Image (tube, rainbow, N blue to C red; front, top):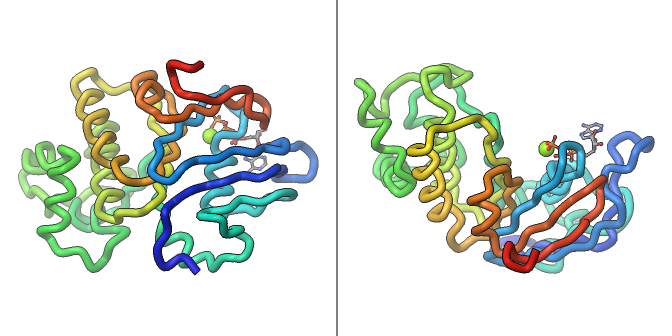
Length: 230
Ligand code: ATP
Ligand code: MG
């Protein structure tokens, strides 16, 4: 299973709880079409990350099913699933090593040229080239020589290079200056192109651009539709 996937994601009456105590998702049914950009919005604790966790199969539903291209995730091999999914988290993961190694993370076989190309597409090469050692610059585990915006661009380059069918992105909430914000939005458009993207959205600009928005409240979908429909 899962040699090639389109990236359609369907939740059928999915119920889930982390601790049997409180229900995190109540009977959720939803459909994300292949290639679509989907925004998940809602207050803290509404279930956004839980939806992302079930798609990545960090957990299985207590009831109901999550399907990709019609295949129930419970019946799929985790490794073949994961190679189609990339996750970009708020607190972008940077490890100690060079910038080059950090971008190459999900695609160990990528050449230097491919790494640089990905960085260029998302506009990360500008800040990288400004550093004395360029792509050979060593960064620390917490990425502290990079600004929040730079870390975000680096993670976009990494995801673009990995080229997954499904991209899950937990948008950073850190305040970023307007100029960087514009760069990030442009990079995002390039990164999302041609894949199913699930964005836990915090920025209005992202929500506006999404094909479909799901508004969550207390583990349920309150409403969904495009920005103009809602
Ligand atoms: P935020 O905007 O704060 O990230 P969220 O919409 O992503 O919120 P979830 O993380 O999906 O919310 O949480 C949904 C519910 O599940 C909440 O009630 C939360 O307390 C609970 N929950 C989340 N993660 C765990 C966990 N690892 N163990 C137990 N309960 C959890
Ligand atoms: Mg969350």
